[in-house]
Length: 176
Ligand SMILES: [Zn+2]
Image 1 (cartoon, rainbow, N blue to C red):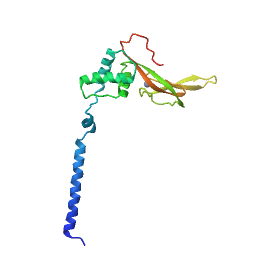
Image 2 (image 1 turned 120 degrees about the vertical axis):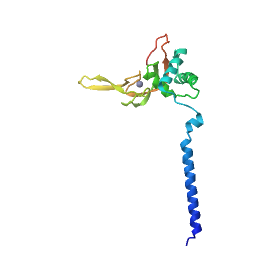
Image 3 (image 1 turned 30 degrees about the vertical axis):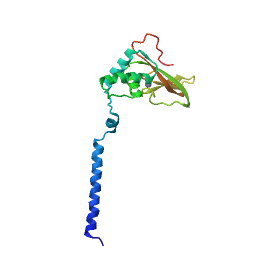
């Protein structure tokens, strides 16, 4: 047997619960963890490209991706203190827009290389093939269609990048 009051009480609790969940949802919709916690903004590609060019003007040879990133972020924050960019985005944009000559240092891994996207710039790779004496072809490795990355039968893992701007005077090797 249920008393009228008991039922109302239960409904009341339920409606309170619903209200609370609505409140949470409302808070979630206005809460942006990225904006509130870190306060950063993603710059448009053109703005980032400009910062890369400016950074390389000051120092035409940069011996690591981390160093380049630090320099680019400095230039970027002169435009907007909240701007940020990852090392990977800076590297890929520099390659995509030919803003720098990139030198890739890699080590050979145990496993076999596979046909797929370039680990440096995400472009398509093509097979490096050789003709056999039997009239067929044999795959010797893969080569990126955009940047200097290549891999033999064993996968080559990029470990370090060197960037050269237009002002670099010495001989720049594309791939080591
Ligand atoms: Zn590539």
